[in-house]
Image (cartoon, rainbow, N blue to C red; front, side, top):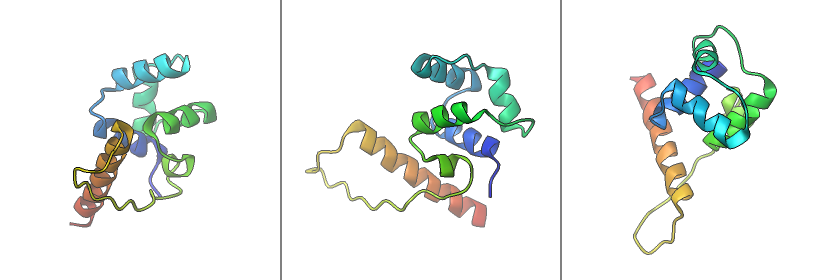
Length: 110
C-alpha cells in the first residue's frame, strides 16, 4: 500500500503540475485554501490531508477515494482508438492516465 502523499505526488506529476499549481487549481475548483506547503508536507510524509481535501483531490484527479488512499488499484481500461470513435477530451485524458499508470508499474518491476 502506497502512502497517500506518494499517490498525490504521482498524480500531480502526471498532470505536469507544480505543488503551487495544484493548490491553485484545487482552490479555484472547490473554494478551498490549500497552499504549496501543505502539499509538500503530504508528499513528504509529514502529514495527511483532511478527509474533505482527499475527496477534493479524488474528484480533481478523477480517481476513487480508495485509489487515492492506496487501498485500490485503478480498474483495467481497454480502449482502441481507431479514429471513428467519438471520444471526449475527458475520456482521452483518462486513457492517457491509465497508460501512464501501466508504464509506472512496469518501471517499478524493472
